[in-house]
Image (tube, rainbow, N blue to C red; front, side, top):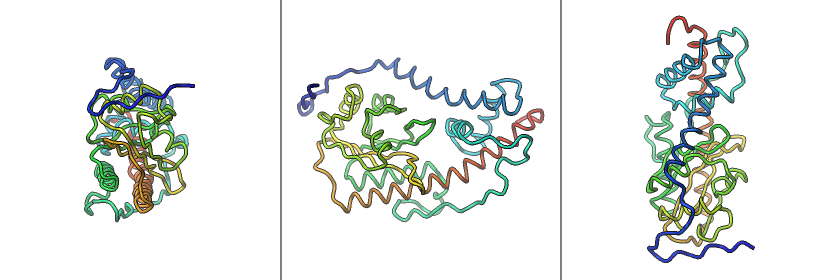
Length: 280
């Protein structure tokens, strides 16, 4: 039977398998570039572009004009069914809707269409409900969770968890089981492997709570997690209900963003890639 790690003394640095920074940097570059590279290859095959450099130019230009992260656009290219051959439009007859209301989040009306503002607002809401100053938001892209926003967490933590696709974290468990997960004590929780446990403890977190951002059909589109500097006793039903509401409201918004803003970007990309000779 594996012996669980002992609790670190108050103020003591945790002991564990710290990964070299160069290793984390190399991994994050590889994972960050892999999805974009796959999208470049698809665009070359689909539109007969001269090469991957031209495909990257199309992706970068559309990303900037649409105000969408490059890796988000690449993910959309990879996992969205291709348009019909020689079709003028990728999504003919698509219905457009206004962004959904988010009454529980601290947003002004002009920010309802901004992904950055919405992620900032849901993180603020969750941290207020759980009474902590440490937390992060992840979005699901390329079949993994990608760190999108954070506060109160150090560089080693954010580099280590820049991409999460292993089952050895509480956020992965929450995403797989589509439910909130509370880790009362990171030092002894069996869900973590030792490198993940160390990465959390060294940033000053002793407990965590993860809330799925779920779309209208229950799919997990992301995750928001709070981190706490001491073990947790748990949350009340009222807190858990409010956290669930924040997750479902944000998930509904993320679904709107995908079917409106992201698909608009793909439509623009389709039009741009069909006329490469005219420039981008």
